[in-house]
Image 1: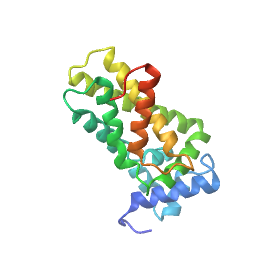
Image 2: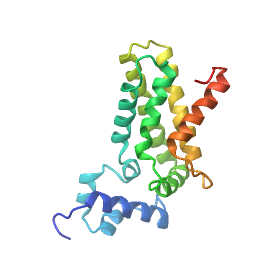
Image 3: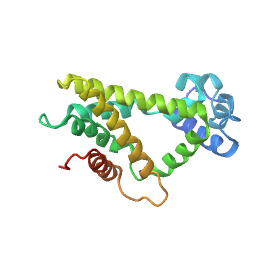
Image 4: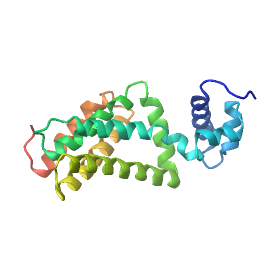
Length: 191
């Protein structure tokens, strides 16, 4: 094994997903992933603190995109629309090329309690960044909290629909439709 090769993080990611799928999440170790990627276990830990974080790589970029979407929402937008603007800004992470991987990843998450816990943590961080963005815009509580938590519900519902095998629509179209459904359930006029 050489000292440094380009694309190490991507190779570790690819190896991990393949091994998790073929051998199971619990049965796969960080050492297995490192070996399959052609690096040392020490190199694995330079890139990821543990094996579960491989499946959550990119979360910081997702959170930054959501925060940017909230910040760039129109100044006169209602709190819920601002919050969902953050969700729609996440579209850059959910394109057609990523959908097959995302479906496989979700199957792994759904099958393992440790991954489900980590997924809930990610969603809580998304709610927190939206909440802080709303407060920065002058929205007070409880409206900021309700809008932020509602945005996470829209995000979760959008992802669930986007991952369906029979779904072909883009992420942002589904997010907007989900927001319209939330508005209808709440008795709020659309638009």
